[in-house]
Length: 86
Length: 326
Image (cartoon, rainbow over all chains, first blue to last red; front, side, top):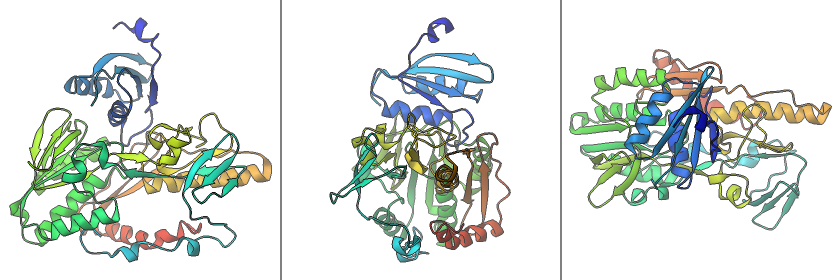
């Protein structure tokens, strides 16, 4: 999905994990992915460059949808969608 | 307590005796918090009106969120569960132990601590060579904090601890003694040691204050989002930071200062900087610690007996905190 579309997305929930080291951005996404209902769009804001790689890998393993990432100055906005129960 | 080194009675105090005599204490659960009417409703029917409220309803393990976990798993976060696990460990002669972790959970360093401590404990009992210990973790490294993950990756092989990363509990089969992850891995166990996912208090959900019992909170002011007189402290916030005693401790400093300042001068100038401090036991006789905030990542120091003894000392000194002395 192109960045231009991502910017129009209205997420169900936004988790701003910038400046948080413990438990960390991916852990926050896993928590929300389990708690939100199917169909939810989760925006994860991370200051950790590794998240842009870790998040799609995990989503692929658990068969949830990676919608895309927008790189801003010093942080990343990562969009995913819960497509099935977990 | 898990290793039989402490008794429950040593770890509790009477709340009334800890509090300043000027504090009016109601030991009844809150069943509704009405932020529009500024009221807290207690289970015994009493309604308390407030000008400012601080919500500290905490979180609790919710093993019911994972099918089969209550029947097949152990945890040490509640007294009865801890005693049940202690009994299992005391009669354990060897076999497979699997540690699995749910999200969110209190005390993010607990999985590491219990692993190092059990390793020492099995050595002391002379059965370490008969124990296969597998540490699992939800993400692709051994801890949420990268420096702590490096520390674990360096030390686990020396202790013969097996690892399985990207492992999120999906279900437990208590009859077959297996646990399966969302990622499709199944592990067999003799003792399943878990940190169940946690939920916040029911009163938070019932009052419409936050999903799963966690309240949307401003990370700096610690006020509930959209409110001016509702503070949230500790595990009850939805902030993506450690659910840990020290988090609540440092947050409390800010909330207390702001309430006092507001009452005196109508100002709330203090801001929480995300400060957290955690001891990490690296066995039964050594420990390290981490300290971090929103702008400073943690960096564990070399473990030492001195830090371990400092932690044990702090366990005693802790009671000065709820008394408002420290």
